[in-house]
Image 1 (cartoon, one colour):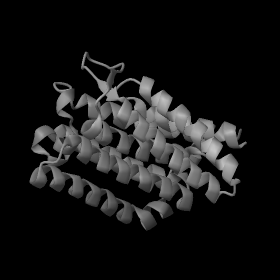
Image 2 (cartoon, one colour):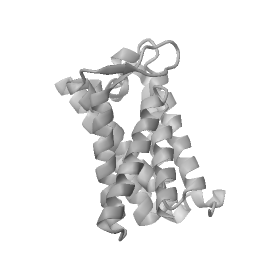
Image 3 (cartoon, one colour):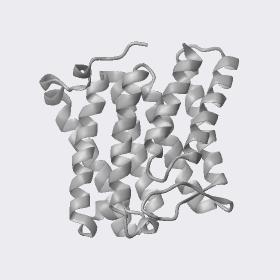
Length: 242
């Protein structure tokens, strides 16, 4: 496989000047949206957190397809700095409140920081080992996980325990995992069809990729699934399609 040079991760000054303000504005609007939803409407953190998750992962995938990896990296840097600033402000920040799960207390800040680093590491590894397929990992991780937690929170009746850190009890639900599988399969199917794979092959490959990503997510430690889902979906797509 072709492993990209580290330089290919770095946004050029030209890219920063052309896209920087637009990406800053997009991230600011995403932050504002979830902050308002939390502060004014007091929606569950499972929803506000995953709305932000969905918006950022989707934008990263679109940026990478249209402008290349450095554009996704540039937005990632903006997101990283904004989240770190929110964690430093803690509960004084409505954005922090939109991300901090009540069930993660007293370590809610850690379960913002850990997924942040996990997302970055997952993106780096996916692009190092499966550069043409990393965006699939973004979408599977971003959409599947963004749907899975709210579905589990709202409709989950059959929880199961998952590995965790710092002694915080963590569970997922079979209903949430089923939602992840369905959304992941749909995403993969649409991508594979868009790139010209026959209907039957696209359907089979999508089911296999979604099953792998869902299984990996189910066994992933609480807070690390942003890494494992991204990487497993990119890896599965690479080995299925090449």
